[in-house]
Length: 89
Image 1 (spheres, rainbow, N blue to C red):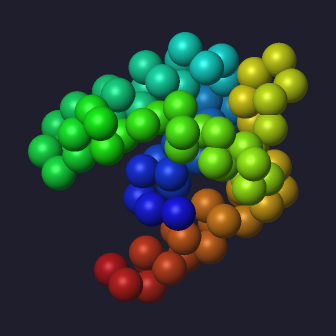
Image 2: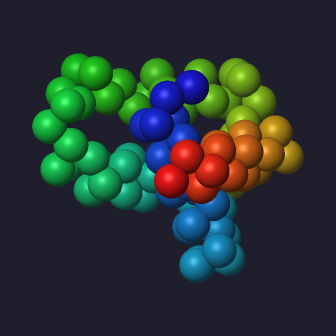
């Protein structure tokens, strides 16, 4: 899992906090592209958002029930990565 996978998890979590609902695929993709548009290290071909979402789903990080939401495993992964980044900074 890289920083862009974590970004997807963060987008899902932020949407849930702000909107109190699960995020739809179109909104997830739109938010992802908005966040990475300034990232010159990632090309469109490297982003492969569909593959990333599929992998997160198959790994049990997100689930889709009338929109995407984090699973317990996804919340834990996002929390652990946030703690690790805080320790580095």
